Length: 463
Image 1 (cartoon, rainbow, N blue to C red):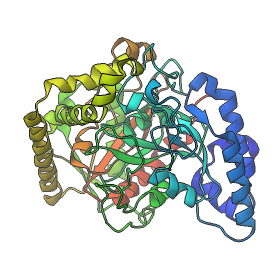
Image 2 (spheres, rainbow, N blue to C red):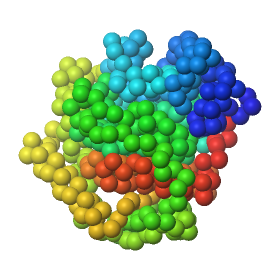
Image 3 (cartoon, rainbow, N blue to C red):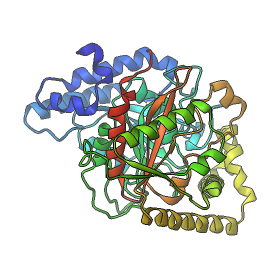
Image 4 (tube, rainbow, N blue to C red):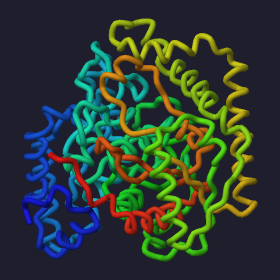
């Protein structure tokens, strides 16, 4: 089994670990060896916590042998995006400004996963403060796409996406302020969930834009994603945006048929924004597959959707500037050129522009509520406009941003991206599934049904 452990799912590994048939120590060492062998090429990790991981694996094995099994994440090696506080381990935000900073406490999401028995392998790469873009002056090497290292692994949760896809960990945390879980999931061929806003505590996560920031799991399968979210979700009084809502069994509907599910397609919006033909063809095939599984699809109109990306950008940039303003003024040389270029755009916005953008967000939430009330359960769309950009393209146009994801940050609705096929160059394509607030169970239900029917999650990078 050892040779195939790197692509074992959490759902398959958990019962083996519980029964003592798979050692957390052996599993952890497989991933650490794989990181050592491949990460000089992929740069998915900034910091590898080798000794801490091995110690935690031995502790997990000891507890399980003593009958103190904590659940399906006990003994499972994962990575954490490097804006998530880790006590005693540097948290850099991929920035020179914090390249040696060591937090004095853990983020809430780190503690939840650790307390469930998950093993931290280290901290994954990102874009600077989740807002920059790869460039010649960045503090650490940019992560690379494991399907082809000439290509980028997506936006800010890039290291997490690359690490999961490449079999460097079994799952990872990501953050999503404008698509930064779902975009890497789409181009790396993994599953990324941006839960309902406030579902997962952002306490101890370095903010980009607090009213838009989401924390979520990135995994290789839909069920694995639900397993991680089960532990990550829950109210936290330390987070002003945390929602005190019951946490359901996110796996409850996985495996059930989807014949009663009504799916909306914002066709006019998709067609009015440039998508590569391969992406549109794959999306048509995915829509057909969902109908063949019994779901119904219909075209929907969402007024205001075309403006959502720009509105989200206004909110994001304004709030990011408020957070970083003092440090940017005091230590300008500690920040990368692309990050500064983006965040300093906020100087053109007035407070009234920001307030109006927030109002636009509320209006769009109301519009989506009307769409759902009129007979739509979920909404599908391409995960982005095309496959991964090359690193050369990204370096040449660091300001490039898509329009396929941000509306769900602005509204706070849950949205998941999963594999939908491959381009002619062998690069992953992604399908996005969104729902009303707190509809994660149904999203997982439909995503899992499609995943099984399509079989794309069985393919892995040629590493």
